[in-house]
Length: 237
Image (tube, rainbow, N blue to C red; front, side, top):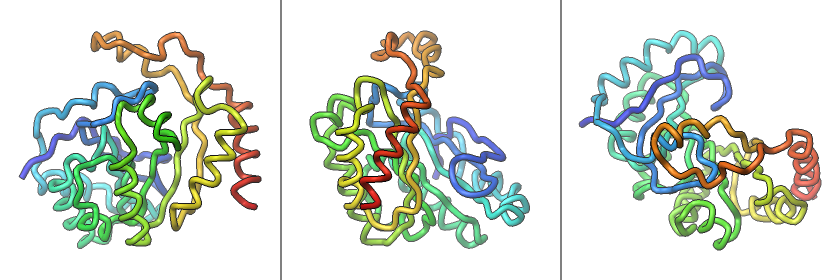
């Protein structure tokens, strides 16, 4: 069995606790208007066997142990390569590796098989209404809800990530509704607001893709922080 790995980053510090190896698996169903990795939309060449990827990750095992780190599977959408991912996670768990999954929750099922091997889900919230989600991603929320239901059933720990986009969700009404929406998800340990940035713009040009947000300005960090404070007030009530 082989998987399509776009890239591997050693010594990542933001995608889960401690020092981590980040494995980017290519392929994604969503076409988020603010996506900064459009090169990963289409699944690439299957270039790693399970054994090859496991051995590459295990080279950093000493760093994981010293810093309470591990491996994070990201993308693209890693859940689209569920069979490959499952076998890799089974092998890593035998080695005592902490495993995080950075996902939008839009895969092809079998979540109940995978989640027992996942220590932490980094869940990307795209939008909280059906209309907003469809407009932003091109997909319905059905698969997202199926994944969240399975996460809740498995009592998996969750970190939430919400990108704040000017003119889309940078308002009090949205963040207040988000606070209520997230009550549906169990075991949330951390919630982050990430300001929309422009660092992916050049990729669209190089790939010959239309950039829906080419003219949109980056999100102001101060405004993002203010919205987070209002969100936290509502969430803690």
